[in-house]
Image 1 (cartoon, rainbow, N blue to C red):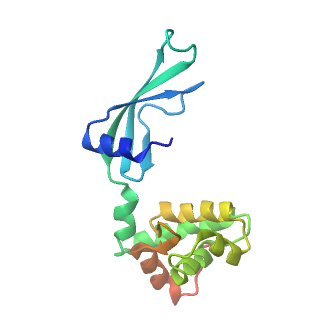
Image 2 (cartoon, rainbow, N blue to C red):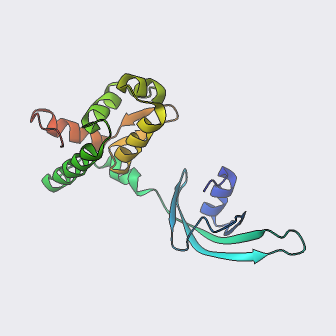
Image 3 (cartoon, one colour):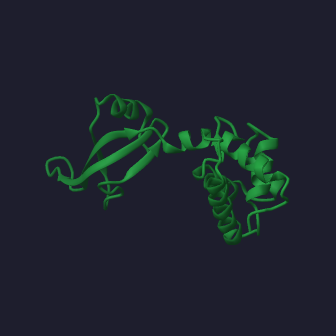
Length: 176
């Protein structure tokens, strides 16, 4: 769900608590949290509103509120990886590698981003021999784990991602 920046700012400030959408069916669920550039936005309610005098289409009213900062921000800053953290990241990357359409890819992409901060996604995708869209999808999976960070142009490895790479560099172990 795309929400314009001025509206997002209004939600954070508490000035905006409702949004209206013309949908054929609800595209948001009460209780859902949506990541936005300003942090998490909570959907507290979604109700149908019929405006017979204006249109025959259904209008949905959503009750919104700011739900806090994006938790990935704190996660990516946490470079103090315990052995349990390291094992959890390693296991998750192993599952991503096993499910990958091109075989193991997670460490290669982390190292590529680390070596090329702020480089455009299409350039990085070309290095990997992939179309841009699937490459970006893969990077988002790493971002969910707090290992990378999106920039205005390109990506960079996060402190957490750097710690993971450093702790696993000498082992020769790849998650798979």
